[in-house]
Length: 599
Image (cartoon, rainbow, N blue to C red; front, side, top):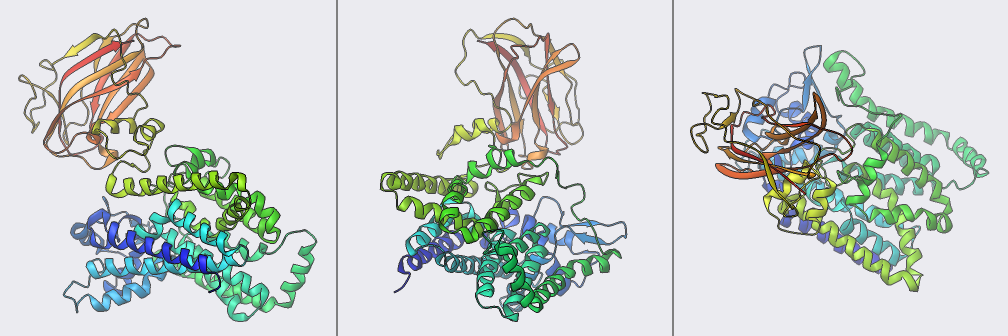
């Protein structure tokens, strides 16, 4: 059988995706914010129940009842009220269009299976999950075919395995497969396949397909209009070839015109929606979120511990290195892939929310892997021919695969990965581990935790809060004595507890207090904070805080400390400690505050 290795690799990859999506972490069988139709997916999906079930695309009045029953997100953010009085979907409708076949199947089966035909019951969750897995399998099949046109069977097989097992594509193709990135990956793979086929044997149908894919990609995420670079640049390796390309386009101008018209018709669906809902052809639906075109966050997006692309998907570093052998091996596609990658990287990290919410690494980069697979395959082919480096490179790849599997587990069942909040200190504390005390999570908010590494410990402040301000509405009993500091829905911030602190002395400050909760606050942004400020007069010299509900659970009483490394080059004369509830309605009692200073 021709191309046997890559076919076998495809079967292995397909089995891994199906196993992860159906057995390891089946989101279709989960509820609330872990369900398939939750968070951003529910926002992309809302068009379908609004049109086909509730007949309410303008007011989306069913949204509140859906949120009350299914709780797909903390707040109903999928649509916002426009000045026209109608509600506008936050996300564009491209993904809803791709969900449509799976939605229609679920809508037909739901009443037959005894489920409510409300758009969010179990049949809809299952249909979107299974449909998304099929999309992933199609994308990988197309990628395999594309790679075989430029790489050997063995290099193609290895590249498939590296992408599926060694990158965050695994998560977004198998578990979070209903998000845009899986669908866009498949669209890019299809676009490359059609582009190669059209230049080899042009037909109007292929041209229409190219326009359809570009339009659908841009309708899914507007920045994916960059996909147009692929058919424009594919196969160009020198400036002298531009004249030949121009002559080719002129010969097939009807094909180009058709592709543009089809792309425009697909893209116009969003314009028609905005016009029908608001009376305006263009609406910016992301409200206060936007781009910083003159100062993109490329360094942070690629290398930061918060959500750096190559920190959490180092395997794709080989794809970046692979541009060198790609230039030597396949110059005809080098410039198309390089220009696309450079602009894609720039646009992706020009977005101000460059960490892209609660994602495993950089989810916004996943769809580009359908194109970056070519330099990755070139890298693989190069090192396959280097006996001195072959086994070392293979060992590094195996390590990256293990690392990716560990990250995927921690993002779901392990629970140690905290997308969007990761820090250098926390990353290295949990690296490749499976069990750590809950106190470790304080490193998500601060980079200091001295542990037992303290000498000459001295207590510089104590307060049992018996003289603290009373809050009579506190629902929690005092932890010790007659009174504890208490904050909650009716009292968001405590009084400030200040004490003198000389510049001379040890540089390690530890504030310790006992905390009591009745109910855990799960919303990270609303978690109560334990705050320490080091000041010189009225000026804050250093400030550190931790979210205590990262550690504190329901009906829990626990001693928690925060460490602060005192400044060595700036003077200070006092410290302040306070407790802030961050707009949460969960009550918190605090007692037995003690501050220690050490070397």
